[in-house]
Image (tube, rainbow, N blue to C red; front, side, top):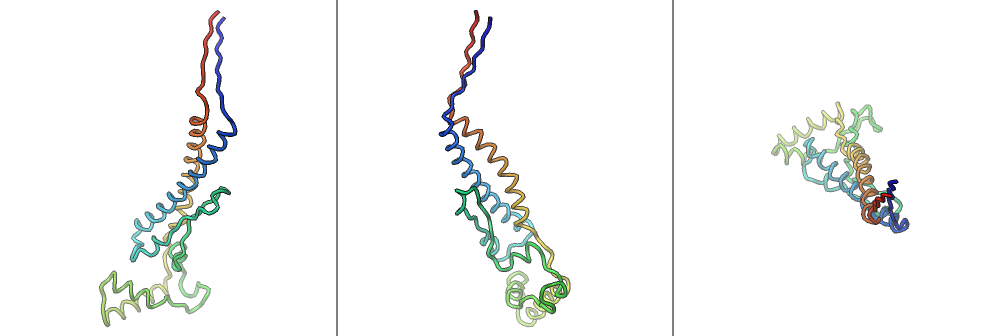
Length: 177
């Protein structure tokens, strides 16, 4: 007779505690990956001027003990970048015009315009935005989708790692009679 015995010992409470720690780390890693993905998306679409928007993308880990993390931006112009903005007739405020000061600063910085050319170019860009709106450049929604995919991978790895690190090796005993 041949008998094979497999023994796998685990301290379940310790393994679960270790797994929880690794899953929290997976959540944090996922959030930081999402932040980096949002930044890379803006850079890839040439949506970086002063760096204010990419520097305003933050990670919030304050609720990680409840299994929640988030990335967010507090830049006031992030919604029109993410979702676009319709022509003035489609906005909440009919007759709305984009603000002059930030566009004028952008024209001076990016296009190098000064004096009368600065004013004319600024007006032309504002008029175009007023008439045609702003095309969306999603950066947070793709980051959220990236986070969803990454979390699945990180969580799978965390569970496997917890069992590998907190269990005794499998013992195989062969007996031949």
